Picture 1: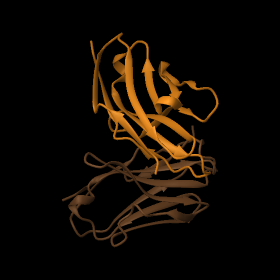
Picture 2: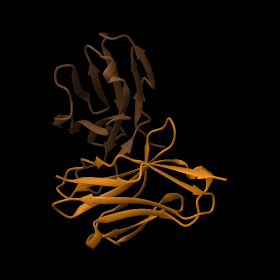
Picture 3: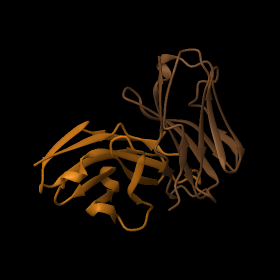
Picture 4: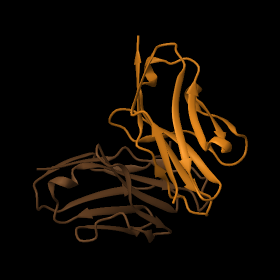
Amino acid sequence: DARVTQTPRHKVTEMGQEVTMRCQPILGHNTVFWYRQTMMQGLELLAYFRNRAPLDDSGMPKDRFSAEMPDATLATLKIQPSEPRDSAVYFCASGPGTGSGNTIYFGEGSWLTVV
Amino acid sequence: AQSVTQLGSHVSVSEGALVLLRCNYSSSVPPYLFWYVQYPNQGLQLLLKYTSAATLVKGINGFEAEFKKSETSFHLTKPSAHMSDAAEYFCAVSENTGFQKLVFGTGTRLLVSP
């Protein structure tokens, strides 16, 4: 059963610390997304990769957030330094191609709390 | 810019009653539309999608949605609610531009009472 795998599932960290979230997309998927979910803002697209190249990261605060795909099986989202307002659920998702109607599959999320 | 509006942040129904969750979209080009469901402490799971084939789309768990271009709507329905349907439901739109970028609505929490 193919699925998007995210680690860690839960993370509590202190303000100012670096946080790295990892995602393994479904094998063969060439598009990867990072979404953030909060009560106030709902689901926001942070970054979008195709064939490991970043296509759109306009939703991501550039001063503290960075997203990369070191290889086709790993996507990372890093926050440095973290702040309490970064507390949220971060979802990774992957898709099988460039068609707009293709289904995007979500991981179970990384629940981040910054204290 | 594309967007979706979900009317009602919470919808309450009794078990066995009709479920109707509303979604209206705005798009400058023919859209692709999706409904996702999120159960507590889980990720989003696709319920169904409209990709310009049949306007009435059937999904998993007995849900269906009808694309109405004249009303710019894509409402989600289920004839008879089950307790297990209690979850958050998100409508999303993707423009037919070759990119899979989804824009989500704010979500509707479905509450089902016995």
